[in-house]
Length: 377
Image (cartoon, rainbow, N blue to C red; front, side, top):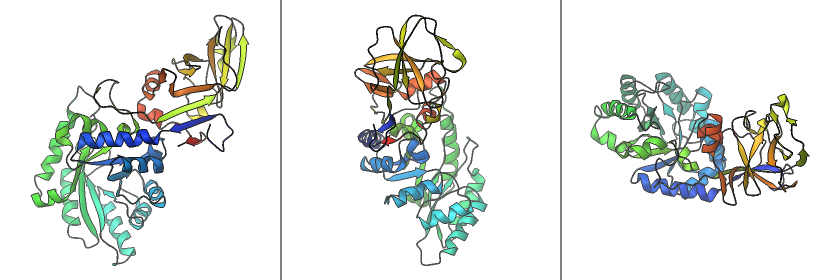
């Protein structure tokens, strides 16, 4: 249990695994640089400690979604380049400049906001680096090819802003049966072909996320933005790339808080949806949907590990607790460790298991645990 916390439920973060994953991926994508994506509090793993681990493992860039996430890293003493993956709003743009973050730009309004922010800070500052994002087919955010060309033309004429990167984002790289990413890459390359070769060579060019970085070596260019893979999971069906050895870094554990023996026919939890089929031992585990475990977890086949054995979660998960049917002969006791995500003895439950049970993707699982759970790092 995490030191300083009396509640017997916690997350464990394996920073050595994070560092090792960064080292593995750095070797795979070499000579491209590794940009470690640590948005959403490091995909639920803790942004600061994750970022430090990734840098130790070889990441030369970090990426976040919003200025506040980048500022957190700067205040923790992290000095590596930090890319903002979305164009900041006006207030965030000034914060980005002050804290030496690299904004992404994809509109003239955003560029004007950036210029205004740099002007407020005076002429003594170095030029603010900026990356332009191109929409090549995902249609979430980004400039069209024509808009991107216009932005580039404007930026290279500015005194306070310097174009240092161009990038795009693939919409379907995790679908092994679809090569839409290659179509997007072709669109992106059509922009690069209009630019002077010496300009392109000087820029940081990046198109790949984790999925594309694994699938498409030709698309890696000068940098690859890895997210979920750094945390130990590939965005494909388990076993798709067996030679790529990554280690999951997040575990969710608790301790049994109550044990009772119930007769056959007992109905459990809210809604009384689960009925025991025999006399059995039922354990209470002090975590619930307020911690990020969906109410339907047991009804979808969710399991935990107690005493080296997988046992089913039963009945509806409640806000603060869930129930486990340990079987008629169980010797489970109050205080026994419960693994909801991670390893115990020779048994393992992964975020892929959770995703399968809950019809989610792995990203939703690891990002879904709430701040109420203490993190042991």
